[in-house]
Amino acid sequence: MEFKIRLQKEKEETVYKSLYMRQKQVDQINKIAKEYNTSFNNVVISMIESCLDETDEER
Figure 1: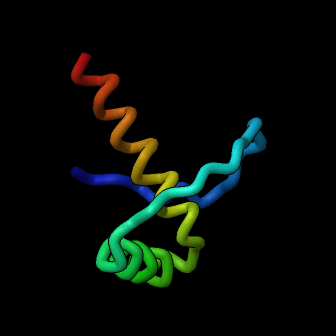
Figure 2: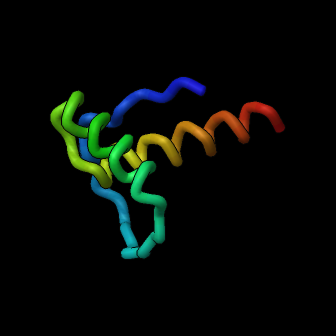
């Protein structure tokens, strides 16, 4: 699966959620965030949006 890092933050209503993740996943996401000079949160949201878009296209 290919995803694009969202670079601009859009002003939309947001909510706070907590996730429990494996350390290996956190390390991988931190590496991506550093590579793209963005936040951990932005990478996770970009991944989720990409997966949701892909799921919508398959339906």
